[in-house]
Length: 83
Image (tube, rainbow, N blue to C red; front, side, top):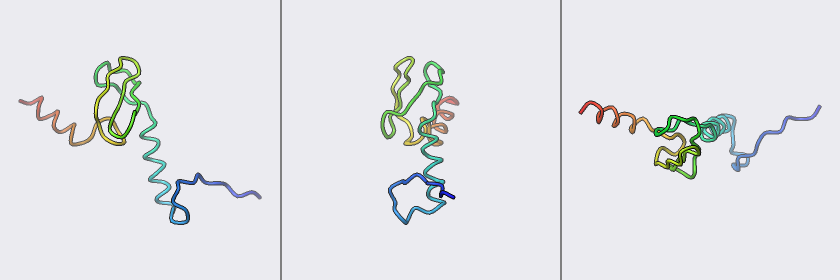
């Protein structure tokens, strides 16, 4: 019976199961489409680390490395909305 191949993440023998699972979860988060803060369309993709671009309206903004908004950014928006 053939062995199931795993995707190599460039860590060689040091790439254990936990590390591979963490890597997979992060990559799935990055490659998913996210909601645009400007037009609310689910068409935001990552350009580079921390830069996000909406393919519909062309809105480009800075965010987190893996997600368009960080927890700290959400907290600061809540504080700004109160004042």
